[in-house]
Length: 68
Image 1: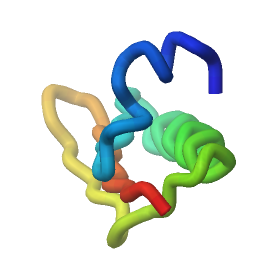
Image 2: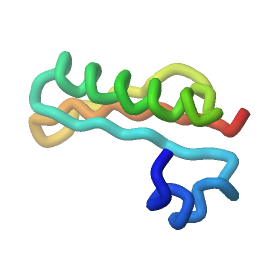
Image 3: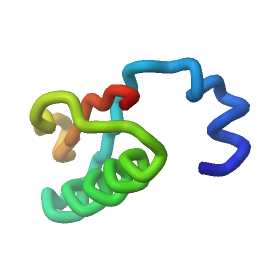
């Protein structure tokens, strides 16, 4: 985790949403997977299943995470 994350107050948060958006589902899925893995390395765990919303020709994937 770089210092910009710490400066944003993330260390005080207990719940975050990770979002990925793309016109191609596989791209949105790969991006979300990468971000979730990065967050898991810094102590966050997925909370529930990812949500998928198709809007304005974009796949939007959202994953809730909680601090471990």
